[in-house]
Every structure is written in structure tokens, then in C-alpha cells.
Image 1 (tube, one colour):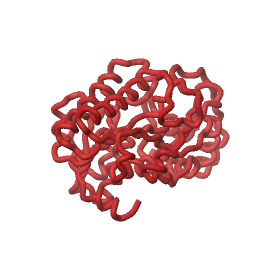
Image 2 (cartoon, one colour):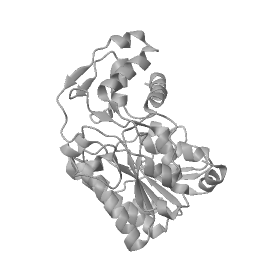
Image 3 (cartoon, rainbow, N blue to C red):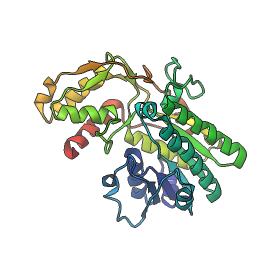
Amino acid sequence: MDKKHLEHIGSSTILVTGAAGFIGSNLCEALLDIGSTVIALDNFATGHKKNIAAIEEHPNFTFIEGDIRNLEDCHKACKGVDFILHQAALGSVPRSINDPITSNEVNVSGFLNMLIAARDAKVKRFIYAASSSTYGDSKTLPKIEDNIGKPLSPYAITKYVNELYADNFKRTYDLDTIGLRYFNVFGRKQDPDGAYAAVIPKFVMQLMKHESPVINGDGSFSRDFTYIDNVIQMNLRAMVSENPDALNTIYNTAYGERTTLNELTTLLKKYLSEFDVTIGNVDIKYGPERKGDVPHSLASIDKAKELLGYAPEFDMESGLKEAVKWYWKHL
């Protein structure tokens, strides 16, 4: 991104919701690095104080402990804000299957609260974390933004409803929005613990303990794994774009290549073996497929390249090397 665009963001006040989470905390650090004033909102339901510990005392950083299900908290956080990067949500397909009510309260009602607060605060642009799960049972590869299927989980439904609400708020209240359909984001600070941990940090932690990771299914399912720095770039580009055709739409946020779970575990063992050679001998186990899982995921990123100038710098392997180095140092 050019200097002019970075200066534009650097002189802005930006609200990051879900700021103590994996993606949110990385966004906060990146924004502070370019001089932005950052307002952060989180209730620590899935985020962690340790993720923002290094920036808590930064003069341009203000943290608000609050819940997007509370409209008053949303209004407080949006006051005086130029842009919103809305990352707060309850992720995980299995979590939504086990507790669809709470997922809906956070991901739909909370999202609506944020839209209302953004509208009332007259923010310039509302950029939000959408999800590749919205493609549902569509078998078309690669995934193209305008071609989706039926959602396969309550989580996927909530994220699709977000897109419908965002579109409606532009039509009804003239609030500019951009949705970023994240594809299996991974990288530094992603939590390896808990029942709903993402596959990469979970497998890394297990391999470091010489425990056998369990793949759901036969390992042939594939994902467009997307390194965190590519996601940061997409959020920055979504904020600075001056192209009116680039607004009020959805973008795939990915690298544009797919990796099977078998290939993933092979790479993890290879990269971790550089730190501990015995990890290469750890066996991989297989279990039943999970309900609601999409078999294959691969994004077309042509739209983001054309309208936003998106140019992802990290493919899956280079991102995975960086992530493994970070986990080895911090776990």
C-alpha cells in the first residue's frame, strides 16, 4: 500500500471490536504501528488480556470492556470513530451446533447493535468479518462471491444474516459497509486451547507435546488456509479504497490455494521437526467427520485484486513457517 493510503489510516480513529481476540489484536497492533488512534472493545468471552498486554499502555490505544449484545456499550465505543473493523463474534461451527441461541445472540443481535451504533455515530465505513462458511453446500470451486449455497450450520446462517443486514443498512440508512469472507485464518496469537480451538494451533500444540492429532475424516478435506498478515492487508485496503464500486459488497479474504488436512499435518511435522526432530515420528490419527463441515474450500480472490488492489504476500507454506516459529517461542 502506498504512503498516501497509510497516512489516511494513520490520521483516523478506528474501532476494533473483538480486539482481544486473535484477529482483532493483530489488527490493533498493525493500526497502532501506522499511527492510528485505536478504540478497542471486547468482553473476553473468547479473547484474552494477554493478546493486548503489549499495547495496553500505548498512548493511542483505548480499551473498553463491553459486550456487543449491549447497545449502550456499542454506542459508547463508536463515539468519535471514523472506521469500524468489526471482528467480535462467536466463531466455530461445532459451538453453534451445540449452542445456536448464544451464537445467534452474539453474531446476529450483536451485529445489528453495532450497525445501529455505527449509523448513529455517522462512521465513514463499517468493515466486518464475514465467513467462508456462507458458501454452505455450494460445490463450485473456486468460491466466487455471488455464488453461494445453503448454510450447513447455525454459525453459517448467522454470518449470512450479517451480510443481509449490512446490505440493508446501506439501502436504508446509507451506511457504507464492506464484508470480508475470511477463509481459515491462522497465525500468531491464535488460541490453541479450548473445545473449539482452530485446527492449526491445536495440532501444533499437540505435536509439540508429542500427542497424536486427530483429523476429522480421512484427511482429504481441504481448506484455503490464510495467514493473518494477508487478512490485515485486506482490512487496511477496505478502509482506504476510494473506488465507489469497491464499497457495499463482499470479498473473499484468502490466498487462493487449498491444502488438504493430510498435507497440513505433513507440513506441520516438517516445520516443527526443525526445533524438535522427534516430532517427525508422531503418528496422525483419524476420527469421524464433523457435522456441518464443508468438504472443500477454495477462494477466488480476483474481485479483491481488481477492486481493492489486494496482493497477498504469504502463501500457506510461508505463513505456516512464521506461525510455527511464533508458537514454538510462545507456547
